[in-house]
Image: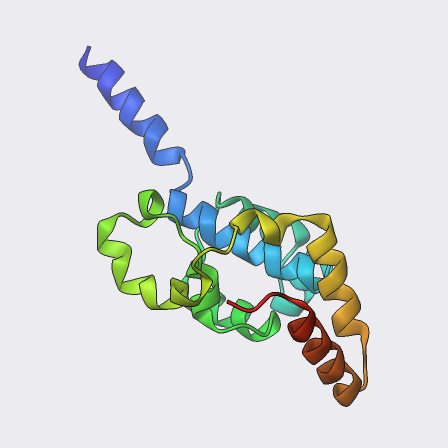
Amino acid sequence: MASEEVLERGEREHRPSPIDVHVGSRVRLRRTLLGMSQEKLGEALGLTFQQVQKYERGVNRIGASRLFDLSRVLDVPIGFFFDDMPAEVGGEKNRRFSGFQEGQEGFEDDTLHRRETLELVRAYYRITDPSVRKRVFDLIKTLSPTD
């Protein structure tokens, strides 16, 4: 019976941490929003696309220096990778990150994963003229209901 406990514990140790899975999913989200392939991201980081896949699935833990590199390459603050972390993933102690989430109350996390959202963001960032992009942004804000 003791060997069964060790085996069970060993199996649990090989499962990805829910936090690593969440951070990896945020890497994938941002990479996808930018229209960047795993191969391109890997090249920018000096990794193979298989290593990027493992990061995105949470199989490989992302260290601090790699997280810093990812934030630079993906052009997001490091906090982005922890945004929208469910309480059950980060636990109650994770409430210190709530400042990252305050502006997103009522925002459906599923919205970020819809194809329409991805296409809209990609199209927006393909607008090369900053003044035109700003006008499109302002137009969308005026068309949406106010809070």
